[in-house]
Image (cartoon, rainbow, N blue to C red; front, side):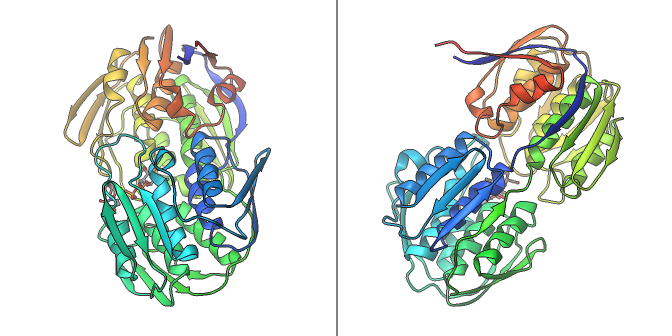
Length: 418
Ligand code: UD1
C-alpha cells in the first residue's frame, strides 16, 4: 500500500504553477463528444478521473490520445452509446455523459455513477430536467436507459444550483430543437468554461456565471482547441499548506477572481496576500488565527471542496472557527483522522467547531479526495512524522502532489509498498 511519509514543520517557499482544473476538464471531455471532429485540449492534468473519462470516450468509439498535458479527442464517428458499469462506478461526474449522449446519439445506456463518499448524492435533478426536455429515461436494476432523439428546448427550474445537473442540461440542450432556459443554474467558474467551449464549437449558449443560462439547440458542432483553466481547489490546497506551515509562496496559473471566498478566509486568518490576475503570493507566520465562521455554499460562497483543507490548516493554529457544511451530508470524514493528530474538533450535524492547537504526527487514512489532501496539509504543519494512506483518492485530483510540495521545501516522500 502506498503512503506519504511526511515530516512536519518545514516552512514552505518558492513558486509553483497549478495544473488544469479537474472539474473543468471532465465535463469538457464529455462535451467533445458533441463535436463531429477533433478537439485539442491543453493543460489537462494526469489524474485518474481524467484517465477514466478518456476510457469512457474510447468505449463510445472516439479516438483519444494524450501528448504530455494535451489531450486530443476525435469524436467524428462515435460507435456506441453505452458506458460500462466499471467506468461509471469510478466517479460521479460520469453522469454528465448522459446529456452528452442524448445530444449526440439520441440515446444512452449507463449505470448509476459512483464517486467520493460524501453521503447521499442523488441525481434526481439530472433526470427530471433531462426528462423535461423530452428524454425517456428508464431506471432498471441500477441502469439508466435513455432515449431522446427528439429533445425540445424548455424552461427548466433547478431547485438546487447543481453543478453537474447544469452541465448535463447544457450538453443535452445543444442537441434539442429550440431554446432551453435554465433558471437556478449553478454559477461556478467551471460552468462558465463549459459555456466557452460550447460557444467555440458553434453552440449558441449564453448567461453562464449568472443563475439563468440559455441554450439555443440544434446547431452542428465542430472540434475546437481550448486551454483548461487552472484548478482553484488545487491552488487553495497549496495556499492552505503554506498558511499552516509558514513561509512565502507564489501560486501561479489560476484566476484569483474565482478564489475570493478562500483568499478572504486566509487573509482573515492572518496571512498576507498579494494578488495578481493569475497569481497570488501568500506569506504566513505559520500559526493561523481562528476566524468566526466558514459556511460552505455554492459559488461564489466558500467551496465545499476547500472545507476540509482549510479546516486542516486552522486545526494547528490558535483560536476557534466554526464550520458549517451546507452541500454534502458526510463531508467531515477527515475529522476523526485530524483528531488522531491532536486536533480539537467537535462535530454536531453540519457544524464543526475547530479550536486550534499544536498537531503531532500520526498514521492517518484519507477516505475521500479533499479529505485526504487535508490530512497532507495537517501533517505538513504537525510536529514529528506522519504517514498518510488513501493516496488513490489524492491521485483523482492532484497531479504529483508530493513533487510539487517537495519543490516548496516540504519533507514528503512517496513510499510504495506492494
Ligand atoms: C460538483 C463538483 C464537486 C463539488 C460540487 C459542489 C465536479 C466534477 N464535481 O459536484 O467537486 O463538491 O460540485 O460544488 O464538478 N443534488 C441533488 N440532486 C441532484 C444533484 C445534486 O439533490 O440531482 C444536491 C447534492 O446532493 C448536493 C448539491 O445538490 O447537496 C450540490 O451538488 P452538485 O452541485 O450537483 O455537485 P456535483 O455536480 O456532484
